[in-house]
Image 1: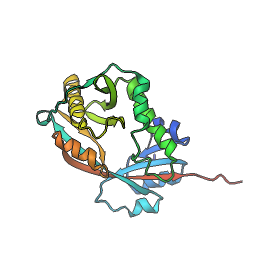
Image 2: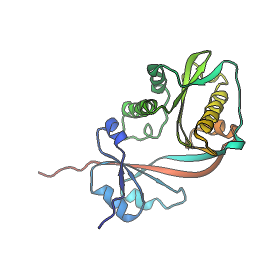
Image 3: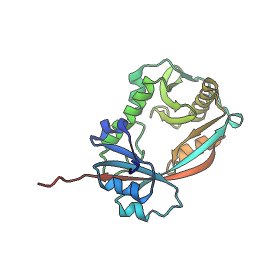
Amino acid sequence: MTADYLRPTPWDVRNFNIETFEVMSNEEEALKQTDEREGHFTIKVDPFENARSLLEHGFYYVDTLIEPVCQKEKLQLFTREGATISTEYNRESILAVAEETFEHGRFHRDFNIPNEQADRRYVNWVSDLIDKRQIYALKYKEEIAGFYGFEQENVLLLGMSKHYRNQGLAKAFTSKGCARQIEENGLAELRTSISAANAASLNLFYSLGFRLTTAKDVYHKLNRIQSGR
């Protein structure tokens, strides 16, 4: 019996109008399965692995993800008068920030995906996190300034309204979010994942006590099978 190396990602199907999968191995049999069915595929591999077989099967590089980790006792806390976080917020205000935040995600860097579909993918993700109560609103003087998305020990998303960027608020907001996430979930550490191209986020999390651990190169593939007549 042949193993199925393709894990469906139904949360992305609604955005891209095609079946979407994460490829769980870079073995030859796994890569062959991406040749045999239509869809959009994502695979994450060690940066030191030879990518020749991926390229031969039609994959293309889109991003490198760095995975910083912070131990509870090493988290650095910052404060800023007027900066608070809350679970009480207007849904549409959070989604409005999401619409203007994710301009450089890996799906925006995929030339096979229109930017409007990539935008919708991230907005829908934030909407899902709201439904699961996994969003903290970032407020400055009681006004929505951004959001902090999380799941278990993972910091997933950080979005700031363009009206509040470059005002020295990011450290206070993010450290408050991290501290609350640790406390409410009884965690010993936090993890996040950041594009290597996002120097601002890497510097932010480093200042909070996160330290770089592993990295993954991300490749995508779009396979459209033309049916014969």
